[in-house]
Image (cartoon, rainbow, N blue to C red; front, side, top):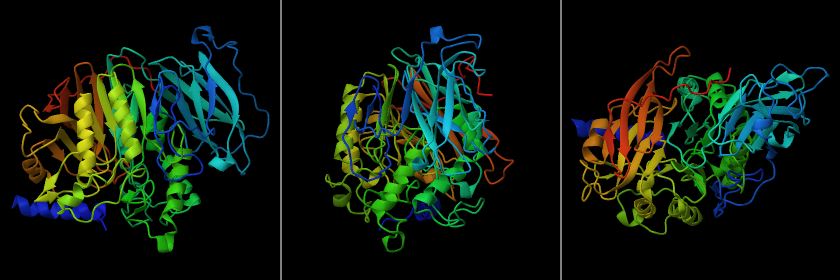
Length: 568
């Protein structure tokens, strides 16, 4: 049985000490859950892991913006009216969110908290300005008790590379104003986004989310998973208590945990100000999950894994602002004009075989039949990369892809090191595609790698010869890193690892233009204090067009001038 991440980090630290002395996209699971794979399809605006649609997400088409009123008068759209008894003041206590933007559409999300369990009539509106003088979409719709009173809406007919503002009404109450942005269509000169992951509420406060929310210059936020944690209070971290206090297993458990997370003011503000593109990792279900089980799942006391996995998938679909399609399929692609093709993978659940239990057995690690992505997702990825015309192919996924040796053996069986044949096939695809940038979370620390095919052999760390791309690993929002400094040992024994920080929390700003992709690591202080969280620059690395090689940069790029204002 593979060891847990906590035990992995403890052992790694001990060893380091001794060594030192489409058109419409579909996405995640529908209400039914489940764990089977589903092959991908490609459309004009985006591509996804499935062509099946759940039909649970409402859609609306925006009006022609040139015909919208600029004075708040008659724009031909309905306006909210309500003359009944006001609903509870906590009606919108879980905030608003947006996600999965395309050039002409975006997902909007909220959750209602009425006094009863009945469906509630709600109203939304979208505008080009935070004062809602130039509205482009508005309509009535109902919440769904079957989906935990969440509302998810696909607003179509929008303009590319445009910032919009939105809000909801229900039972006479009004939500906070949200802000979102569509993707570019065709030529694009620059994009700017944040990469983040691993938010353990029990280990502290989400100061990093607050800093990201305050950045008006971002096009989106890419979240690589461990958005929630499944543990009981005090089981892993003791700064804040969980709701429910027990480990989450049932449908009501998972819903309650997401509801607690979404009442956090810093996470709410992040969602309110920026669209999010997210994938799950393991803690959205259970630690060290794979297709047929998880280290932190005990069938004798917690029921069948398929049932728990289905529940976790269902609640993720309800609470996250992503497009839904085939059950439990979250891998998908979003085009950002001719500059960036954003491909989001599921290296955690849909196709993954169990982690190997012996990292000293090369025959096991190199077994070509062992899967990480699964055959259908891998074929879909091959098609995405082969047909991409974007300059940069940016791939968001969960676990460290690069080879990492600590001592004489691979570092972690849960990473791509435990699935070396699958990694070799990916490297072949990346070499053919060119300009591949991999985004990674999961490991609660910061790393900058070249994707070297043979790190100890043909790879040249000075110029990147033998590399097929680069990989950046984001630190955790609040989850704990390595308790002792493993950086020196890891960098010394892995020539393709240019830089590492083992334990600081924060996020990465990725700045993309036609010349290079630059990654700036930002760290926050004192996540255990509600008043803490000052941020500082950790490191800056960049890959130039056509080089597949990270080089340290002098300073982070200046943000674009005069970004659209944040939502008030």
